[in-house]
Image (cartoon, rainbow, N blue to C red; front, side, top):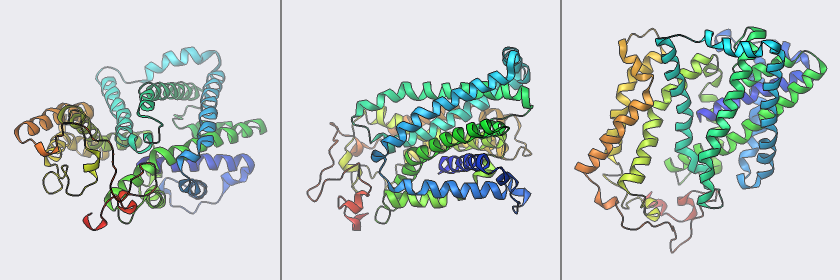
Length: 410
């Protein structure tokens, strides 16, 4: 839900620019929101408009939105590259020297290493989220082999977009003396002429479309699946998406998180101290402990072989606690820099690496000393067919609601 909220707020900013491009007076809308919120009436109204536009899309199955995704895939790269060209052009002959001189703005020595580690950890945090919920939307692939292209596509696309953003922000800084680290910050600078407003509108439209499609696939469906697991008798995919879109986007107060780059990086790093070791636990359990052999049918049985100890795999929780504990003081310091924790704050700057180094041996050791033989199968079982029904993994209903599970046993 975190990314659902972030993308929704960003989408609202793009909607705001589109409205300003048509009616410039919208930028002068009287503000009734306290300054402590870090946002204005115009910001919240635009956020609400984007939310209303986005809401109907969750009731459409992703497989029926192929045209929308194709349009997004075609126009967003054009806008990103166009923004890069614009930024280099306004910098003029100074573009090259500016990019070289940008190194002088970076910290030196120890501070540079600290900045690198902090930024790298924040970037890894974005991947920690995706590594956990990728299955929620990759299940719509035509075959398991279709997933392999993501190994190359995701790093390539993210690196390209990040490079365009870094160069654009650096060149724009030389002209405006501002850190324009958000796409809508740069697009807002185009509001200087009729042609500029037209470009601002089209660019904002492309990015807003990108946010909608990302929220549909990568964010709302993932949150809905988690809610289905918590209450399978009452929540299906559609209901889960509705809860995520109506509650999640407001509960995370994204306008506070995006108030500054420092706040954003601090939040990104903080939640990854839990998600990163969870992702590694899943990898180790699948490839090492279970040796890629699972009984899918048993996963949907409340009292099946994967029940462990009264429904809890305590080995995973112990390993997770051991991995998270060393990073907790650093997280507190990142949220409240006035809290003094000494040199342990440097551990937090490489929190993901520390978590991996702890969670892997601890989980393997616990499984070695206290194994769970009932959860080990000789041959994998991938079919989930019951005498009552066949559960369709592409449907919008939960296993309990499909009749695949006995609701009284859940």
